[in-house]
Image 1 (cartoon, rainbow, N blue to C red):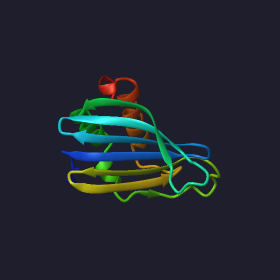
Image 2 (spheres, rainbow, N blue to C red):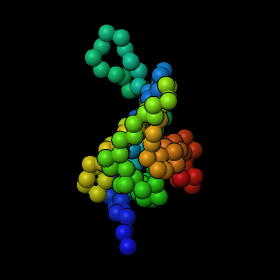
Image 3 (cartoon, helix red, strand yellow):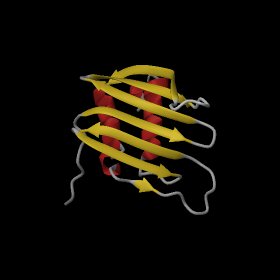
Image 4 (spheres, rainbow, N blue to C red):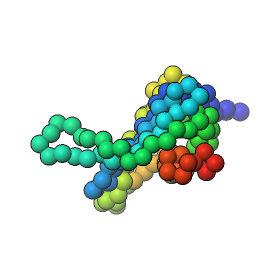
Length: 137
C-alpha cells in the first residue's frame, strides 16, 4: 500500500496570498527546536522596483507543532501543484507556497484552486501567530 512521505525537518516555509487589493505573506523559519512565525502585509510603492514587507505580528513556536501541521495537511503532497483559475471565476485569491522540507524544495501555486487541506494549513499558521496557537493548531 502507498505510504505518504512524512515531514521530519524543515528550514523555511512561505505562503503568499494575494487578491485584488491586498497581498499578505506568512513565513516560518526554523531555528532548531523552535521557530519564528511572522505575518506581513506586502505594500506596493509606486515608482519602486520592489515591494515592502510590513510586519504585522510574529510569534515563537515549537518546530514540532509546525511539523505536525505540515504532516496533518500533507504539505509534501502539494509539491508541483498548480491550480489554474476556474474559467467562470473572475475575481478571488491566488496563493504561492514554497518551503524547504526534508532538505527538499517544495513549490505550489493556485488561483481560486488550491491543494487539499490548504485552508486548514493557512488557518493553522495564522493561529500560531495570532492565537498563541500551539494549542489551537
